[in-house]
Picture 1 (spheres, rainbow, N blue to C red):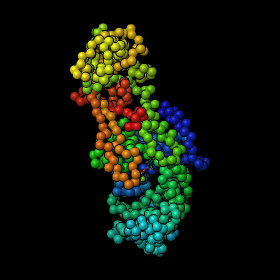
Picture 2 (cartoon, helix red, strand yellow; picture 1 turned 135 degrees about the vertical axis):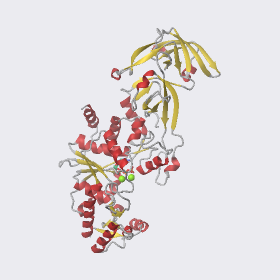
Picture 3 (cartoon, rainbow, N blue to C red; picture 1 turned 90 degrees about the horizontal axis):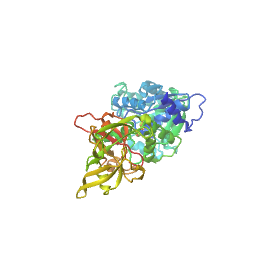
Length: 530
Ligand code: ATP
Ligand code: MG
Ligand code: MG
């Protein structure tokens, strides 16, 4: 219920609408199960969900566009279902393009019989050349009988059949190249995950999509803007088959700087071992950004704000992460971590015997709860802070109070030990330095590893001719060891916290007391574009 309220709150500020909704709204999200969902898909899925479930009282279909058996896997199918659920998207119905292979086949026959399609065995290069220059295929005016015969040959999977494809007979030379007799059926020998070896021919996306949108009752087909040239072709198919028309609503493709958003390229990175897997925190997949610390409400807000824009821009990551920061800052618990490298021990004069006290995890939000803070005369601080101290300077030990720096022991430039003297009457507002510290007594310090990441690419936007492998960033990961307060031992995987005076982190590996540190991934905040 709370989720629904939060959702409609997010939706209310985005006034994006569909045309002509009197006959009801049914949208569809049609992923090809050939990879894990990335943030581009998240945009498509969230927009479909928004119109169907938030803006209008409609329904949303999830259609697995599984018409190309060479790229599809069961693993991807399951992951897509899980990732949609993760985003809070519940399709009202799930279907598969492959459920309709017989129907699509029959429509192809009808197209041929009506003289709206023909069989072609022109080789790939020649066909591309002819399409480019508006030259009709030599098979364009073959008889219906010949065309049907070749389609049968294709269906048999014979060597001869495999040379052919079926093309819609729209125009050889329309100024819109998408209208130049697109291929509607092609041969594929690989077994299909759902229909096995039943079929040796498969419909193309250009043929499948308009037909299924129409027969499955879709009212509005949301498509990325780069399909715009193909919109007339979509309508042509429906008219040729006398099927109900569907309204097309274009939206901008979402691209990000220094980021690959193509399942094909992401697959290559996974297969080559360049990343840990589809959920790598450097990956723009739903799993990747989530593991990096993106929250779903923030993702939703970010995407719906982009909603009506039709400009294809290369988005910067800063707004993405600063939107997230707005969501996590008010609710994430504050903890302390001290870097191990150069760690400085200090004795605190005037400290009472070791004890613990309950303190709020978040100073402005009591709902976040309380944590145990340990106090004693033996504490640790970070080298960088210690280095900045001057003799007899008054500093503030955060969440404790002021202290004088009475003794600074050094070895060369490096501070090796400090002696502090508590001065709790001192005004914390008047000190320049407020430092994090941890008592080494009255708590068990937790070894943690803090991990920061950078983009996988070195170039902001790859051009068509660029080979992405030439722009892979050689170093994308940094690790630092630290000690954290005892409360950190009970943090769970996925919990988002702030290490004070550092930044926000997501717990990737909880503390298990197995000799290995707990692992925390740095969450970008939009301050740097990483
Ligand atoms: P990819 O190139 O990553 O394989 P795709 O478009 O081929 O992307 P599909 O699985 O066919 O992947 O896409 C499902 C839906 O997601 C389509 O409606 C598609 O338009 C949309 N989509 C894919 N990438 C983006 C993106 N970068 N921005 C917005 N929508 C996208
Ligand atoms: Mg696709
Ligand atoms: Mg693609």
